[in-house]
Image 1 (cartoon, rainbow, N blue to C red):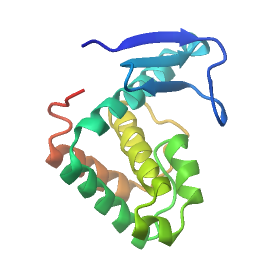
Image 2: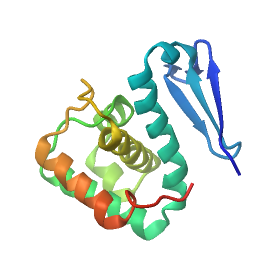
Image 3: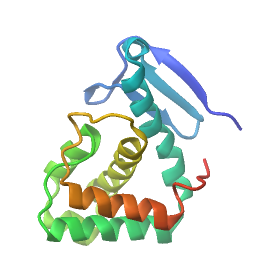
Length: 154
């Protein structure tokens, strides 16, 4: 079944203005209409939103593997992220969230996955790409070894 794409003026979620949003059950992605004037940014946001569909199809073993990679980053006190959606969630986490696998932790894991995909497929260096190169490389290796860069199911 195809995914419908829409442009919406002044797109918002419960926290405020957003560039895009994935509606998984409806198989729809909405983008802020202003992105029409910013093709590179539209492409980055498109990949991020598309990977929300991939996240739900990864299966528990691969999602847990991604969580383990992020837990290692936390143990190494890695700062920064590969997009704002993961960055602000990361800032709100504490050790209990990770250990208890709270909703906040799982949402962060999903957003970091989608932001990492957007970084991998972006063809430019965006100011939101603040994660250290060594952690970026670990994430890139995870994507390659997990098979996500070869073929994704959405």
